[in-house]
Image 1 (cartoon, helix red, strand yellow):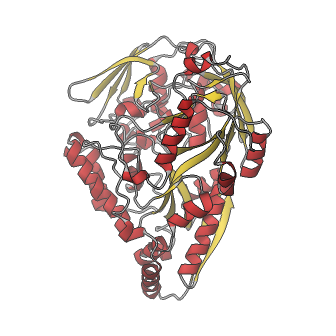
Image 2 (cartoon, one colour; image 1 turned 90 degrees about the vertical axis):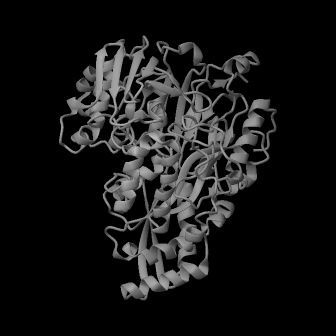
Image 3 (cartoon, one colour; image 1 turned 180 degrees about the vertical axis):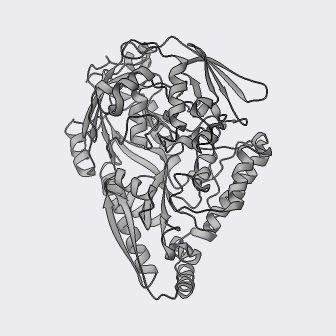
Length: 573
């Protein structure tokens, strides 16, 4: 597409910022946000000013998605696509402002006790789309579901290991009843939360979907169908789901006229279209069937000079996960080190993705978490290049040592990958790099729908898995917590007692209230992960997108909720 249109100064500024944040120079800068906020990009944050320049359109915002929604149950969902849609129609206690800071949503106000162990939230007058009021018990019910072993929520650790909510860990382990969770409805409008230890980032957890409320009476009326259709979902948020079925390739939400902050919302609705082929998606955009679409690879070269092109940090870190528990070859540390040294991360982002994604050499990606001194936890990408940067000679040396230890001369490994366009391209180049650098290695690629790939990795039915993780909150623990023994996202089932001890010290031990000491210890934890090649970091994702110039106010966040549409305006053309 070669149409040239003027875009707002704010959009141009956002593009400049996001391209800098995703480009090769990103690591020379450090974030200036504190640990309760994150760097974000918005195409415009003053929607009323935008509306003044043109009448708001009554059309829907037409959005391309790469993957289908996996679950609309806030306590069962685990992927960014599902989180985005759930957040479209549900508010938690807190929400993100344009800069990523936690601000009030269903909570009108809150207090924290002097010892940091008790949070009290006072709820505003808000209601569900069936007319029922949103009450403190809706949060109690939802959070008890999250820790209930019978529900088996993969994000239950957000309440225990991360949120430190009283008795959460014991309930998850089956040692206490869910009714003993440290969350109480004092009355309909007052929620009390008791913690095992102070959590500095607790408010930022409150905008994460696992902590969203669920109306108990409605949930029980739906039985096993909850979250599978418009009739089995309730909204207390900006939009209402009015067209959806599981694995739908197109679904729709309309503005919620009864939303407590309805005057803020300018869009008539959201029209999502799941398109996994990037060329089809770009053609749909050019034909006017989409207002927003992702582009990648050679497409970026085609459209990068178009004023409707922008690149924004997506927050996700992509990595290869080796199954160290069930695959003897990958239990060998020298084999794992050979693989990580055989990967040319620069070639992946420069020659294949071309979307501004940056090669990553650390277990925690850059530009989302800042420490007590204001520095980016992972600004220094050089520190681990001696354990994972591309080095064919080192790779070959470790490879031979590993083969000798195993008594083998060759090896075959299978890599499981999502059915989406970009991951398949990355998997293909990884296959080529590994086979060319490590003699006797054969890599086969197994393509699966994302839901099946995630299930296989969680079940341990994989050898190598190409996967990603987006930060759930603005602290390194959102990544480092995954490698704790028996964490549900520790796909390789790696276990290290020293590592577990450090994480425990930083969450419930003396360092929980020592910000500087905690930060230093988290670096020690990351060092262990990298030294033992627990994962093979690849790149931090940057999304290259096309967005119609009459669309402004889409907020992009690298943490928890990647896109938010509450302030989005689509003006008439």
